[in-house]
Image (tube, rainbow, N blue to C red; front, side):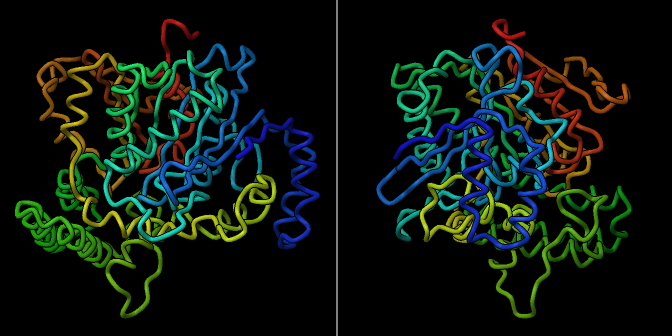
Length: 452
């Protein structure tokens, strides 16, 4: 399939002219901003990663005056699984425009070129042609991503082969990042792919699900979100999750995890799992709704809200011009999540540990202070079981300052090629909640001898 590249004026004109079938609201919104937005150079395309499995990517060239040749390339992977990088990551977190198509002051494009990938197949604009083409485990996800990256670096965008390449991620995207980093590093080492892979960062990531989950009760109680009875009931529900994992009943563990979330919502009067200071974050449920359907809605609802869906299925779809008629943005995302049920609660700490100990890659973990679903102490629990833990404990934790306020906005602690960033005033979606600090963290991570 042909890859599209356009200047900002041509993009906006073609997008506007092709919007005659879009809703009036979509058209008005695009008309309002089309004259004031100077879009960066972009490319997008599909890659058939397996038979009947089509993965969509969207590349933005950096706005740094030095040019793309002199700054790194960052791939962003969303969570869920089933969340859309080209949608949520792009327009709600780190891309050049927000959901209202207004310029974002804290876009990561100012420091790097950005590659958004709708992954796994079925997320966002990616799609499958039949039910058998969905992924059911992180290993298949990693292989699919490797096919996409090989196609990208070896065919679609060979100019990026020597550019420092990093992977950043969020939530379940971190689990996928660990897996693809392992196979990508091997492919680079054997010469199967030309890519200057430098490292990866896992934000509020689903690396050891049981550790992230077992901390819920203490976190809620410490922050006055449940009383003592609520704390005990939450912990009781979490014991069922732990038991299922100990027995190797992974599907049962996922279902028990969903049930535990129901207990948390009930006892906390609807705490927002993504940011405990933002209420009303849970998607409304209906009486008699299946547990798996409720879990899917809870995990993907924030990533596929109505304004974002309208934007992606309206102006953006018309702008891209290569989305098949039968493909609805996010239309297969529920199935993506449900297909991963067996694999969802399985840890990938062994992969992370191996990449720290056996490669020169930068390995980064960052965690939002206000996140519940992947709360910080749970992340620290598996980090302190890594082989590098003793050296990491001895390292000095350094405060980081918010570039705008000059106040403390986080901390970082490093040992060898591993770093942990604590991000204050942020929940699960760190760049969305604390954009200044997230951008500062990005710059610290991607700084290499070949970049300024």
